[in-house]
Length: 278
View 1 (cartoon, rainbow, N blue to C red):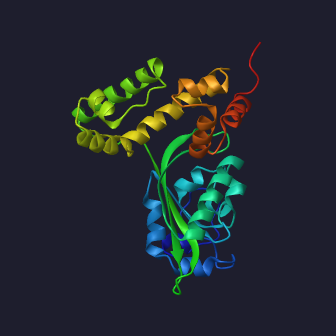
View 2: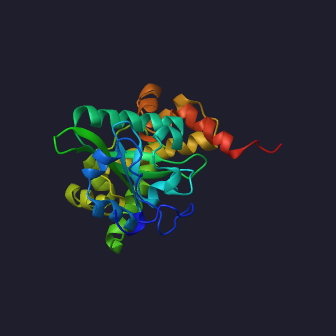
View 3: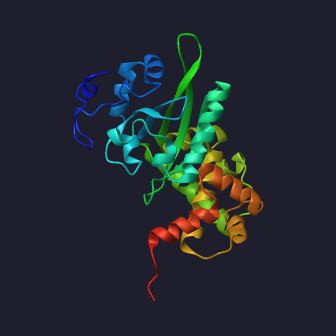
């Protein structure tokens, strides 16, 4: 499997020589890894802002890169390989990953452009775009899947693009302040950024890695997350302030994107913050 899989006795941590995949002794490894390119698996470690993993049909991680390891609470790949999502992530995230995996494995159809807010236990959340593809053996049977999640941090862009995007984000924030219940169309967003819809789409994807509608949805969820963690505002009022039609639609959307219900997200944030000073 390449240079960093030759030595299987390394110490924990991001160290040279640590295996990129599970050993052949883990059930299900052979069929899945035989269907993957060894060079591709090793190449995933060169990525600095993309989580990568390969799972077998039972949900065990058989290959991961170091970016993936850093999003768990573990220190090394050795502590990740052979385990399942429920062992590594908060329950709400693990349940969502398992539901996604089950759909890909059942239908054999890829999952693409899934916007997600991912965080480890006690860790800082970050926005990612996730794709999952089924892996088939030589007989065409689905034996597992591969997944990549791209960290949505601002990329390099020219001054005009960055200025337009800064105006757009500020305008969306003002809209949530004044008219959260009124949906923003793509034409509205183009006008707010001072560009045509086609130019808007190109600029938003370049800077944020998202479509304009996904950017608005991310802004709304970020607004809700801020209110949930910094105020005691009732959930129905949080939903309204973040531009959702009602509390049930807010709960469904928030849970789909973050892996947690709003109430669970609020409880977890309070637990992480500890008791408030008198």
